[in-house]
Length: 486
Image (cartoon, rainbow, N blue to C red; front, side):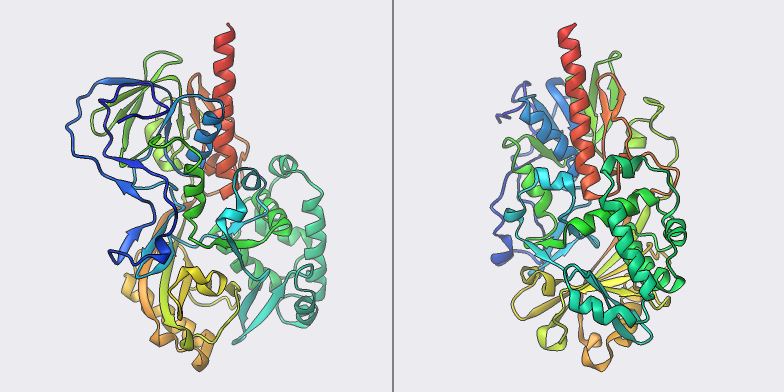
């Protein structure tokens, strides 16, 4: 096998390599009921010998951060290998095809206002489908609209007197929008911080809008209904929402990492290849030992682009910048149902959030109302999100509770009991915990030749992962140029 960006010999034969696909899967009849969105090829099985191979840079982890790092390295023609433990790129940003429905692995929305994403992604090619700019809040036995006045002025005017906050609250939202838009991202990330809930109280928002809107809406973004997440992240998300739209790629959230992967040389991403350890030969030279016995040597450096718990394991004792213990991660459960279009007479491409203060559902939406390509013609895909893992309840128990709860939301008009259960995703590490104190601008350099990236080192967003990956690669490039000049 010839690997375009590698300098070591063809005797290294990984179990799976990533090949760029043409993303026509959702139009084709699937050969199995459940399949990953990523296309794989499987060469004949070969017994690998534990021999030493060399390349320029080894990037461990093909999530958004790892892909962004690899793209930056490739832009400078630096040889690299991107090693991924799972069967596809994207990390947590993955999509499965189940009976013709596109199921994102957990509740994920892409905000077009992300600055790094605007720079690196082709939005037109992603065919982004927009949500309604606002939300439908379930409270008092009915739904009430919270609308962005710059996009839905009529709805915003009509909502001024609804029970989701006061007129003063809605004025404070406008002032908050102005405040965040007049700050740079660097100013936001380095500002004095408090928890989001304390910030909202300090601004002067009433309990009614905090409990009925901010807790379910931003709690659904942070997977933190208590709103203990840093005010820095709140301000950044609020700014991005003001600058862009909530969207879904037409072909699933996995279209984002797959587009990034398509920018890299063919066969430069090796799948199903877990890393066992990272060892230092000297202060600046590192080797990566794979679970299969292979040992890879990075001539210029290693970039660790895995989730925080895995990074702690791989880097234990190698850097004081990696904590021994981490804050408990944010978790979520996402349940999917299908229904006939006639059973869901709800056309809104809106996010429905639970402002009642009761029940286990935090938010839900009809995915095919936003992106019709998420399901077969005439069918509706329903996505329901809970905050936390609910480990004491089985999937069947959760399904029963969700159906009962949503039946109360929608009444007889929507036959929730007739929905077909498709699948549940319990995502233990949905997001890093970013309660204060935080450092959202961590130095990616752990030591000469060793770097780390991921959303746990910046903001817990798609954008944070992309920025972190780029900055890790740039730190390596800077060090490499200094070594060459000396």
